[in-house]
Length: 278
View 1 (cartoon, rainbow, N blue to C red):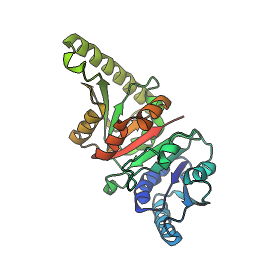
View 2 (tube, rainbow, N blue to C red):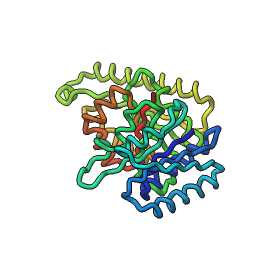
View 3 (spheres, rainbow, N blue to C red):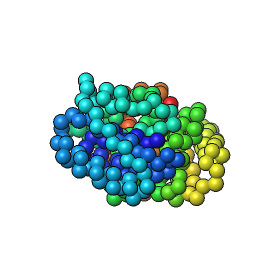
């Protein structure tokens, strides 16, 4: 099942397009839409927006299941209580900059949802609404997590049917003081390590997904600025969606305490999905 947390805004409609297409790839073809009545947007507007999502669901032969939630102690608490503990489900929410805060994740409902464990979560930053939630070129900047492909398989599997090209990318990050003094031998060792990880990732992907229609290319870079390299590649490759998978450790370090993810969310030329599995 696909679960969508919709805030009633037009931005929520952009995120919903991903949710509808994901739901169309599910065996049960169901989309559960959760909306917390917090009073920020009048009920008539919310009803109108959700009716448009219902129409889009009809066009994709997806069952539309809206659920309006009363506001409890917070929007996050209301959502969490309504999310079924289904490890095979995928919760989709949006993340966008708030007035005066100038941050996309820190302190947001999306950041809190990314920390829960009821089901896998995908938080989306949509900058290309014209894609209609149907990207064909995907950029995967990988951090070298031991679980490799299984961590992000639930999202890739739901995207795979529409993809044409997947860029698997690994930045071998080194200290900014050390970087200019790396010897050719050390650079070679780092790149070999990166290539070995990418080859293993690709082999796991082909094993899990079977024959796929999309093409996959691989690249390893050495840099002292991970976020900069990711943004450069997203622009150069004209990627339509960038997917960042987070482990529990990197969630605490990169999202809550690092500026790198916020920088990518602010400067990205393409849609960004931040995913955390169980």
